[in-house]
Amino acid sequence: MGVIKDRHGTYYAQQRVPERLQKAVARVLGCKKPRQVFLKKSLGTKVLKAANVCAKPVLAGFDRIIRDATAIASQATAVPAPRSSLNATEIARMSEALYGKLLADDEAFRFGGRAFIAEGVEWMRRNEDADFERRSNIRSAR
Image 1 (cartoon, rainbow, N blue to C red):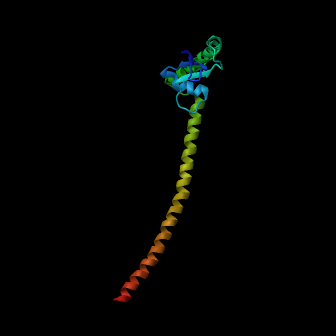
Image 2: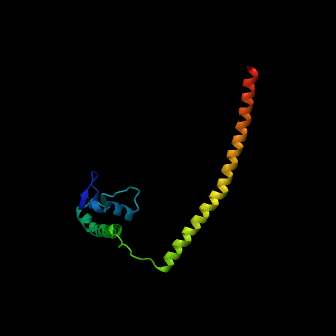
């Protein structure tokens, strides 16, 4: 955490992200990576004294990002309490959804079932004719 210098002499502000918050920080930043291990930003200077002055607001920004990630992580881990009852509106919506599903399944079976039977009958007719021709060819060859 703090100010570091790269191989070209430019100073950067850098802070390591705690492991439990790395996924949440990546979400806060909108990264394509699934995890963000370090927060790092160039301070745009090669002078240590100026870098120390510029680092304070950058590190404060890092703290804001960590705080937002902590809030996201705590929401994700919070488990809602189990419910013991439903209200009348929820019961009505659930029953309507179930009834609609049953009607859709019944309609699909009725129309799909008839089509399936018709396809089966047609297949039997085609194979019956072919089988009849094959049998007659075998009998005539004897």
